Amino acid sequence: MPKILIADPIAQEGIDLLKGHADVDVKTGMKLEELVAVVGDYDALVVRSETKVTAAVIEAGKKLQVVARAGIGVDNIDLDAATGAGIAVVNAPTGNTVAAAEHTVALMLALSRNIPAAHRSMKDGEWKRSAFMGVEVRNKTLGVIGLGRVGSEVVRRAQSFAMNLVAYDPFVAPDYAHRLGVELLSFEELLDQSDFITLHTPLTENSRNLISTKELDRMKPDARLINVARGELIDEEALLAALNDGKLGGVALDVFAKEPPGPNPLLDHPKVVITPHLGASTQEAQREVAVEAAEQVLTVLNGEPARNTVNAPFVAPEVHAVLEPYIRVALVVGKLVTHLAEGQFLGVTIGYQGEITEHDTATLKAAVLAGVLGPVTTGQVNLINSSRLAQERGLNVTEQRNAVAQEYSSLISATLETTEGSISITGTSMRNEPHIVRFNEYWMDIIPTVPYLLFVDNQDQPGSIGAVGTLAGRHNINISFMEVGRLNLRGRAMMVLGLDDPVPPNVMDEINALSHIYNARLVKL
Image: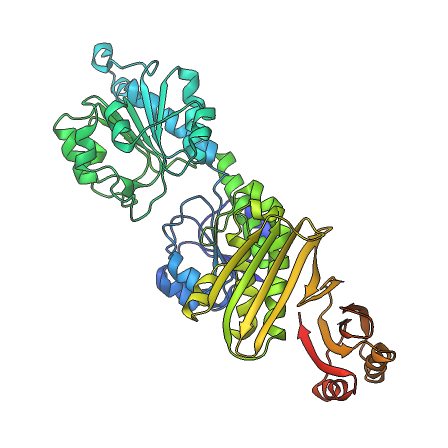
């Protein structure tokens, strides 16, 4: 069974799910050097935000196939190092969506009505109604920066308050924003017009210090800023200066650049409402992210692509459902062309035909390249690092599309060019199973579910099939199925045998020595 290390606390439901399929160790609170010392024994690592999965951890994790973040942000994981090592990084982006959205709305209301300060005053025995005059959110403009899952849920809740909703997100379609009831603005326009601004964008090098002096100066003098996303999105020194200069009506922070923040003047500022990173801290969210992360881990360990792999080509859930069967087809056709080819690799041409051309095929490309490079590369090769490895090897990769597929709804082909010529394999998915339907110019139908395939290039004549079958039987090699493709009667043909057992080299020599055999090649699937 695979071994899984849980390095940060997650809900018991997630742990129980993993324990049903793997050996699970829960070791929380480890220092970096402790994690580096033990991670090499594990196939999967599960963390939250506390554990930093650095390049050193990735390098030490020789067996790691997947690192899972039980939450949405993965900035505590070295994605470049993981990608280079072929390790999938998965997250749980949907489990805490509602919790984060609700917390955003709670902070907005607390900020608008001075609830924390009023609460503190009452606890101190005071009754100062006039000191805590607030503002209504009705008819105010809420600017949402980032219309992802959380941002969209915030919008849906803010609609019930009769707010004017605007957003900035260059990566969403205007039609989506229109259906959501949001007006898309430029970043500068949003800063200029908003009474409340809430951040819901991931942390990247481009978004670090997204809100700094220049942006704060553009905001209305009584604007209120809310951050339940990532602390590093705001330049905290610039924010403090703006607050001290009276440039903002208030700020609500659930996250900080450093956590715990330690001594920080923002914590004591009278215009700042603070919570200790509670965006996902609901019982429901903790259960859901733990289970979602566990499901992603088990999917990867089962050799399948996880839908929330953050360092692989992004595929929308509805597209993933369509393309998933063809990912397995792509892996098989890539592997077959490598096993069947001879000579120095020059380039790969990947062809897409039929209905799949209507979708983003980046994942299919990665799968074909993983199949091509896997048999000839030391170390792990998968959808995560296959494109990078192809680039590093100088392999020329070409993609071709044709909206029409011959006789099938969709086809994927891989043609490997070498110094000795080219090999082409075409496949499709039927009844949720991969089918190889063409080898070079020969049409056939092979379901590659056996351990071995024997490709026999032969003269189509009486006795050809029987001679190969006789040799297999003599050496106790069980034939699962046999398929023949030919171009014309008694011409050249391609015989493919599905085998349950390997063919020793001496038996391969006997097959190749048969008078009517041009070439026989064995592929281990």
